[in-house]
Image 1 (cartoon, each protein chain N blue to C red):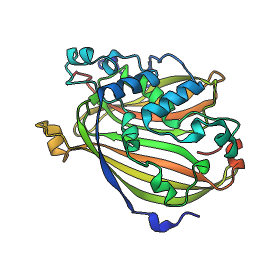
Image 2 (image 1 turned 180 degrees about the vertical axis):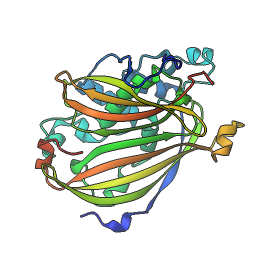
Image 3 (image 1 turned 90 degrees about the horizontal axis):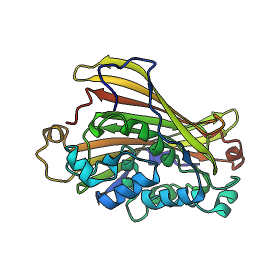
Length: 141
Length: 170
């Protein structure tokens, strides 16, 4: 849990465990997400689309990156979460997420921090970047 | 070419009941290890009424309808050419297992953008509103008109399959 008495720009958040992208993981994400787009599941379909092979659902990457937020603050303290998929996430990529506080400020109604999140694979290739706005103090309701 | 006449089109709505077992499976599939999102007993002990919905699960709720890609097929978009370029969530109120929500979407914008490597891509912006249909005395929800969250999805449609090999889709 983040300590809301010590929040400063530049501060890093603790990182979630890496996530290895496998066909089985893509299939299980498809099942739980309801998104059965074959481009993530069927090699022949992906190749017909001009890809080398299937690749990860963007929302799997975004969900993984959100773990850095859910491990730090209660659900109601996440105000917004916005990200861009900057490159395809391939099979056998091992994703790692890191997050840094970029700003702390007050609005008319609440205290906020901005967090920048970057997801890379094991070769430091960027896959996803995001900004989240968190409100504090991080009390449980 | 995707017809600009679709801009502003409403895509209808559907109602979904949030299920504990689905949330647990989602948490496991996405590398979640916080027990708050996995164990109902733990969530209750932490003062929550049930398992909370994780931040990106709202996107999945939109897929919980008979034919989630129909709106794209109706515009002539082929799944081969579709990429998810970006996603935005704005949260008004937390959501928990056992609740019913209404998911309503519209096409907010369609525009072309030409990149040096990617060539011309057509971007489709879809906006989705999640509102609660569960009777609630929660003051926060009443003042926000039952609004739980807003989403904005940016999809990129490729015009040439070679663009994909260069992975410059966003």
